[in-house]
Length: 205
Image (tube, rainbow, N blue to C red; front, side):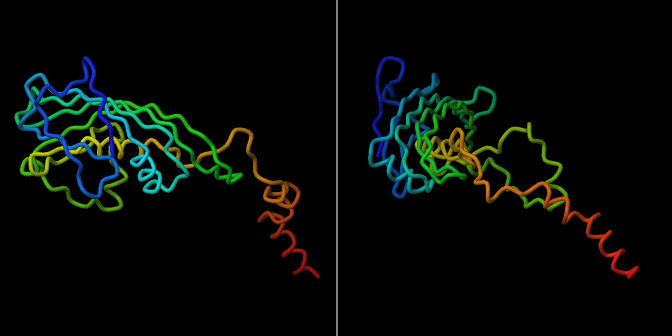
């Protein structure tokens, strides 16, 4: 489902056990206990099968290319925790929300994720409607759990690609058809003030 690009600066050096996780379109599982103190650097690229599976998952016409560069290292400040710094680059096809035509998008994103054993992560309680309004948008993202001593970095970068997709892709120059545009004069005629005036006039008759 993926092809690892090993080259100087992007080598596993025997610190990683890699295998596909069943059910994941783009999987590259790392055994954290075998990561050395200097960390692990990887470059991954999705093959044709993985790109087709990701396109189906994201419900878009195509993922034309998808590569990721990963740096996974022990957190020097907190024992048993890890920091993943990554960069993804992709070329995708989406459907224009106006014309319904295919539109090509280029994606380039950097991200940071933190991982800790599940027993170190405090369970999060559901926030009420009022509490959720006070969430700090600049606060750090929650720590991801390490399940069974493994981190699926392929699944992580796939999640980041999903987050980077344009939710409202629009082809350059695409505009709403004339018939769908509200008429300014018609808006004035049916405005609340116009309707009130008409109602008052009817009562005087």
